[in-house]
View (cartoon, protein in one colour):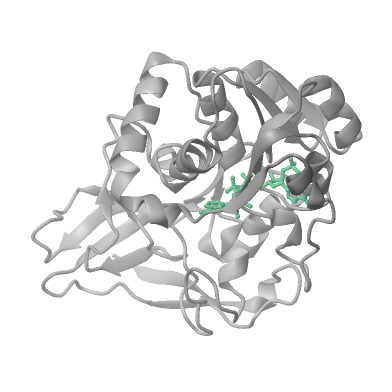
Length: 334
Ligand code: NAP
């Protein structure tokens, strides 16, 4: 084994993360102590939530400390082990961080089966992304057959899964995404009933056509101003699922919705969730999504970027530029 390149948080970003907010360090790859294993990281998951973890403010998870290796989900192969549950050659995923090798005591790490799907899929549809879509839609959104589900970030990792699950559950799936190409992908490749290009059309007007009877479930990945537009088109007893608000993550001050009184008028509810609260049911969701994939009724799409860990800030920036289609994953160059 050679050295281990690691990306550490060096400063709390103001606005969009810059190269100068990170420091790349290199140290020898550690030998595992008893009860630990070393994983050679092959793929790193890029998530909008990473931006929030860089802030020194209370959240559902502690912030990444200055000087600490940047937190990230990742997948790779065990190359040395003193852990009874993990052997050399096992494929694993876990919160291994933005680095080439990680030492783990096994907590939060799971073995993954490459016969079932390739490594990036275990970070996407069969990983936390799929779990987020599944539980956020089904447990929080509670769609019923025949209802209209609208999801923003529809060409992205979570959004593309939400629309497909909605359709599998007998709903009308309407996506909102940036650009004609993404909307074409959402309808033609993923099978959504319709997709609104928020960059080329007015969302509120387009919803009149594509959700003529109102929006029963709105799964929000992006926040304002799209959230505000959808709030004007809610059906009675609608559910607004607050999954994320990527449009606000680099803003100093979050712009909240001003049309929230429609929740009252429409007897609707708005509810946030954190996927970790469903951890004990991940196997159930992964089994169902895996079955849909095997049947060919659910498509996972990964946007794999081969890069050195040094390029982490640039690759992360693709999420904020909307450059990704599907699950954004870095293929780590060693
Ligand atoms: P993603 O959708 O694959 O990527 C982000 C997408 O957001 C971009 O491709 C871009 O698509 C869109 N976007 C960026 N800036 C935007 C803006 N200003 N306005 C509108 N859209 C914008 O990312 P993901 O990993 O699937 O995450 C989606 C959301 O789920 C995020 O908000 C994330 O924080 C949240 N999440 C929540 C949980 C939870 O437990 N609650 C867990 C995982 C993820 P366009 O080109 O279409 O603009």
